[in-house]
Length: 173
Length: 443
Image 1 (cartoon, rainbow over the protein chains, first blue to last red):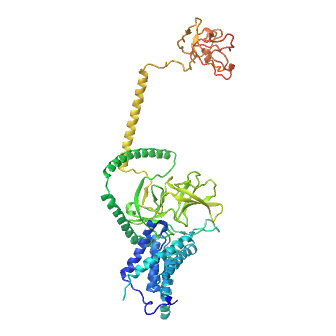
Image 2: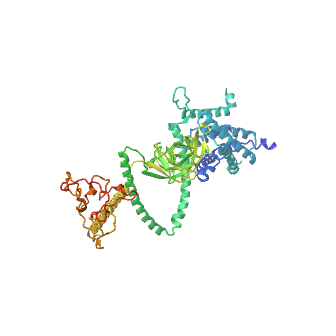
Image 3: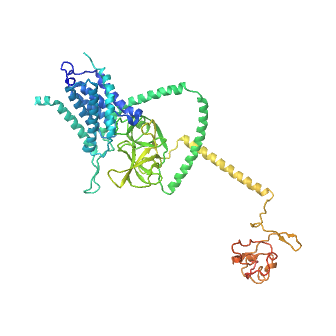
């Protein structure tokens, strides 16, 4: 329990990154998300834009920042699909806001916590998208829940690689 | 007020962003009109034609991502090409020579086939039957996907500047892939047939059952709205039906993988199809840009060459037949052209024990219009007349000797013979009265 309580002297400080990281990393996530299924086929169980949103929201610890980043990333994801613009946008917005809110309250340096958070946020994103498409919009789309669970698992594993790499880019005092 | 805003700033921003996106969604999705008053309108549908603002977002997204995808794809191709096109060039010259010969041969074959196709279309036009044919395709490379499991779209490296337009069919050599949904200047978005919002008219090859092909939640294409039918079995081929004005008729779609009951409607089934094209690993596709008969100059030249060759072949064939006919006339006859078409009969033995040679064939007289007793074949004259006029009597039930055919049941009737049949005929054989004939008139 002690590990989850932030140390106000160090853990509550806002992580800062160079400006080009804020541009390049989301862009790279979008490009890879669109390109990797060509290599992995239907086994590309990951959502890199969501992963990047969660990472910056957790580390910046700013709900507004997480909200806006999630909205932009989600909207761009929607732009690459044939569906309505806003489905991914709303899901990522909610995830970004919640990730930032959680990042304020708990320590997110632990890999297990990061895995659990990624798993939970990916499932939340899937649930939000399904809610929007089926309930809010009434689109008769069907969902394969196993694929969504696998996507969440894939995101958790990808987070173990991506988060430490992004940690290296933060500005240290 | 200021403290309220600062205190709930995060929530206010969140709600504002969410509200803006919800409004945006509401604009894009419409509820279909009910078919009849009081009837349910069915599930909502996403507008197939995007508004200006939505199109702008799609354009920005594609412009942001596709250049990098194109660069990644190009660099991969470049590395492969560096090896295969500059380093590994063994036996290329021989292969090139063989391929050139093959191309020449295939071009002529293609021209012949096109000629037949054009003829078929002319015949179809005569019977007012319209059918689309693939005439012009543009090859394109797949450079990316949507990246979403809910959305099965791909991006190709050809766009409006390459002549692509919306609703063009996208195929591979194996089968259909999808249709062009959005076109940007240098790229295009293709909606793949395994997406839940796609639709293609298909027909089962054997059972001739028609349906609509659409993706399911697992990303497998399936034919929906089919009434349960025991005849549909796995392995049956599925073809495009041609009624959707996008895919030409008869293109392979895939084979039936399994038949599942429709979970929402009990009497209907969903036929899951294993696509003929590998939709998960698409590299190169063909966009059908034209369904009209516009032949390129090269194709027209090939067609003319084919017609010339075909004309020369026909002329040579006719010449050969003519020469064979002339030769047949000049050669000593192996068979008498005047000989009647009769099977061989046993030689007639004369009173001296020697076979009597068959007399020359005499033309058969036509039946007299007004026969009298002097007419050949009249009663009492038949055995010595030297003619077989009795065979030509209208009474078909008698043979050449006047004997009834039914006299020897189960045995073929006596073949006609121009020889006097009296010697071979047993005495006292029943004869039928012959119709008096007059041979001097022609009816």
